[in-house]
Amino acid sequence: MGPIYERHRAVTVRPAHPGDAEAIRAIRNHAIEHSTALWTQTPQSPTEGAAWLATHLERGSAFVADVDGEVAGFAVYGPWRELDGYRHTVEDSVYVREGRHGLGIGSALLAALITAARDAGHHVVIAGIEAENTSSIRLHERFGFHHVGTVPEVGTKFGRWLDLTIMRLPLT
Image 1: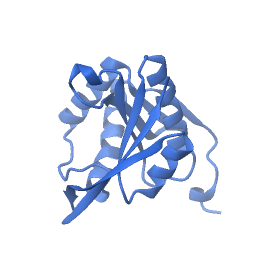
Image 2: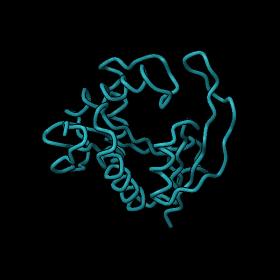
Image 3: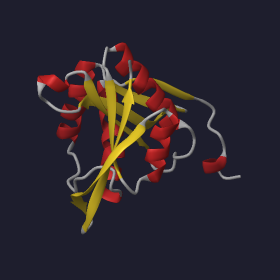
């Protein structure tokens, strides 16, 4: 069997560090250029990617999945909304490197992210997922997220309107 179908030897999820910035940026930029997971068409520069990651590192909310010495995915959580009334609610993001999907990497990352958010005292994790991204919806469902609504046509990319599915996981 080809390597995509073989189970990888081990996924190690660890806190991200500044040296992971370029690998994370490459994964983000691939998603920007080839998917509707990120609703922008502007790739991050190295400076923007490092600054974006630094914000998550300061809060302790960035993790990477290491497979055989390669950053095979990353996950972060950040504020869902900026007003202080939302301070106990965070939004998650989980991304897996192209060619590494279906190997349990996303599950390992989401499990670590949920544990970290709970340990940090957060009350709820929100997932905002493009409505046709059924693999991400299924991943979140497996971890107990519930669908709380879909907002039609609130974004656009690749010349079409996108619907946003909102999912919620209570942590306490």
